[in-house]
Length: 156
Length: 314
Image (cartoon, rainbow over all chains, first blue to last red; front, side, top):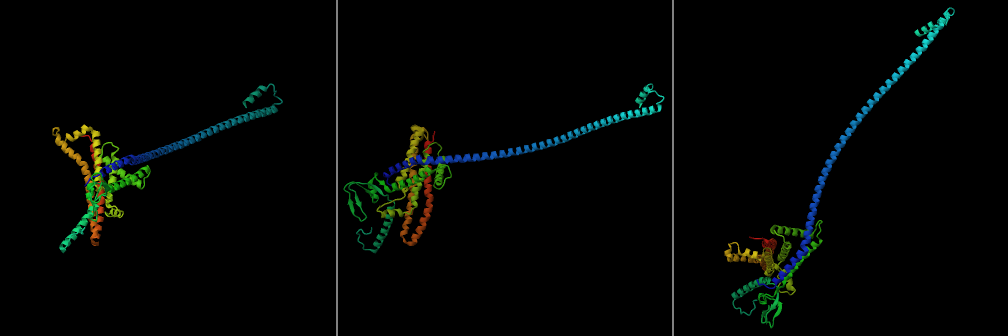
């Protein structure tokens, strides 16, 4: 082993290499590595978040579905109820109308009957008076017997 | 080598000389492989022996490539191992180029190809640093990355068959060519001493000069035994860079040596050559583990030493 100026040359070379490596090699590579590491971590976190959000959304969708179903059922029930009610009301109205028309018809009939009876009575009374006049033409004075005739008309 | 003008009379001596020659050539081969391509200044009056046994006496100080260990020694400290520098800088530049390309193109999207690999390495280093270093310091992770990849690449040169590049170099007229920079102690000590200075710097910065001194002087024994403490802790401190550098150097040097010894078998007939080939393959496969492990150990210890420098003792 003999030492010579190579020792110094080597040291200088070494220092230069280390300096160069420290200045131009290590930082860019480390930067790239760190940035990529961060990106990957961010990506994974985003994926996790997305997954979580998906789960939430699915849950929410399920809830919505259930709500909608319940609402629909409620609406249908209400509609059915309303329909029944409407039918009931219609029935009631129809019955009332029927009753009313029946009552009106009956009243009409009664009126007509009365009127017929009145006219019949008048006609009978007229006939009776006419008959009686014919019988009594000679002996009954219409003026003296008017009271009697009126009374008879009222009784008929 | 055997033609040095020795008069041969006895067949026995002749045999001995042949053996010695073979031994010498094996030795030469190994030595040749363990010699760096060193550029430096030879002092005036130095005697250069060339391959043909001619001697040239230098008139004045000469800048040249060293031929042989003696010349390297003569050049002293102010010489440089051109091959070590060339390969370490080249490999370092490959590392920085690849990683810089990936860093430039780094996006937060899906990574592909090179970026994927680079990110995997960076993440691995980052995990190691987070595991062993419990303070905040922007220097440590890039330092660890550089140490790991650079040392790994330098060690990786060990897997190239030992003769290929030196042979190619010799064809180009370059006498010595050591391709594994981490088998050069200059390289490993260059790294470990730089790290040692960082350790000293952060020790003083984090704990203050007094705190650092008290850490060295007032433990593990009571204060009045501070010379003993200082000795123990001082040795421990000095041992860090030395062990760091020697561990890497030793492992790589030994691995390289085994490759060289296996390569020697290629000259011993084809049966031995086939056996050597199998052995080389097996050792190379095993060596993949060693080079990675050594790079990892160097990096981990770097992190740990820096962590210790930051930690507050009592």
